[in-house]
Length: 184
Image (cartoon, rainbow, N blue to C red; front, top):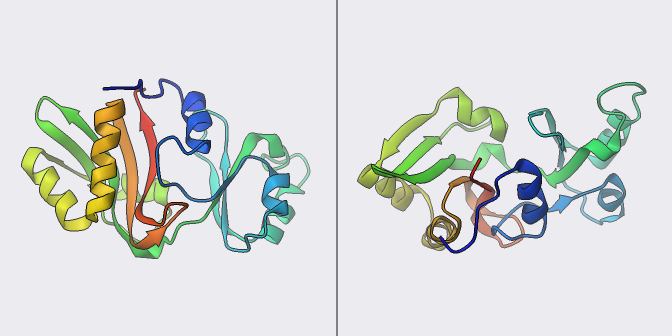
């Protein structure tokens, strides 16, 4: 391990927004930044609060403005949100989180499609270890993405959470989005 993995969600978000961990969707830290960007695709709103899994995927900018204008709702405090490009959940190949353990690689994964990212994993996940984990990665993740995953594990240790899609996505135009690198 060369660098320490984030030990808190807030540390992770700061580093993730800077692109430290590799391919990620387009992101905006404020509503103003989102509205000023010429991007016109679908967007996901995520609560910034630690431990709050709430999100709203697949919204247009105008739907976001409508939602955020509801007075006295959980959506009315725009400072509590981050925004990111919505991912094509109908094109998921494999998703999960992976770490090194005493059994070699430990890979918790799902291949569910058409379910938002954060729910897909918990619906029908499986666990494989060692060689079986390497075989799944070889069969379902392109080589450049696997090399980056190995780099993340070598550099940070901890847990790496990702989703691999059928086509290139995100800033780096890889097939895999690296959602989180953590040691918490």
